[in-house]
Length: 502
Image (cartoon, rainbow, N blue to C red):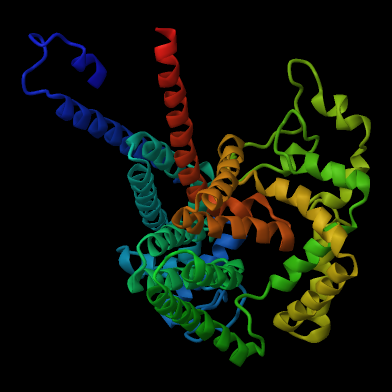
């Protein structure tokens, strides 16, 4: 529309429509269309979705926190539910805040609360998702100086199938996505313009992230090293960075330390949540893959109907209603049978499958954890023992463990629709290398949390697509930044060719 009006002859164009006003009107229409599309997208996708096992845990914890002041997954009307460390408290606390602030939710009893559709609480999360999309889009707009990459990043976050999926089911991934994005933006601000409040907020956000995603607890050390290096060789004011680092550590350590001290007092272990040993043991089992299973892993972890013969078991979180009975042919050609199907058999997939069989790598780890828990009398003690067993397995053959990380890293790339996450991760790693080469320390600080989490999950966990879905907002920002770079280079090359053509 702006282009049509600007092309009108001066006598035909309305005198009050200057170029600046036309540009402003065009952006207003685009923003209105994006917001209207977001509302329609949410209205279509939010209602009428059942809440499954994980979601009931988080909702139960939120309800018990509001009504009893206790972090507990116990489904009881008792005023004193038992304490547990079944799951981390970050996301349930976020839901509890929504229960308190959204009218009509505090009056519901726990059985009714777990059976209800809870659309108001979904809208509470949706509002935060919209805020995150707006802030991310504004950040890209300001950094690039162009609104179009900002619009792209906004749309990729606001219309993300995976994030809507997690909002519907009350999974902690949506809470982690918000925290990781805000942490990345705060780190960018703290390095670009160091200030005590930015470092303090970064520490608090990292604590919230660790209480939502335990892997972020281990990010404190590399981030501290990064800050120290910036103060030493990065040209930033040492006194301000070191003072900020002390404040960053304090605001991180107090919430995380308080929760871990609570668990140590009640269960005898300094833990954020109980399942670290179980996950690590399952991960250690994957190092036993045979060469043919190693090839099968790349196929099994690829959610493409034209390649994966068990594609119905590996759909990504965004594919809510997508459950094909088997893989499909592409233009009459069976790509799997024409390629790796000549080498692999269906038996090569047996140990990789998630829960379809009792002898899979995952079910063996879960069964081992259950035996340890039964023998040792409590799930926290059993989990600690499973962790020791897993570490012994890894140290026995660390090179096979590292080798198994490659197909598992491939698995983690499919955290949302593949045509978003595959270029998104490519942009993430490109910006990480580019920021080092250009000494763009604020941009490196922005991408560091996402790079750390992806690497951590590839090395320590089975790196399911769901584990990396919280990185979608950061990936959307990276796509916007890279799209602007590509467009700028194309325009420069085009401008350089014009004089020669003339």
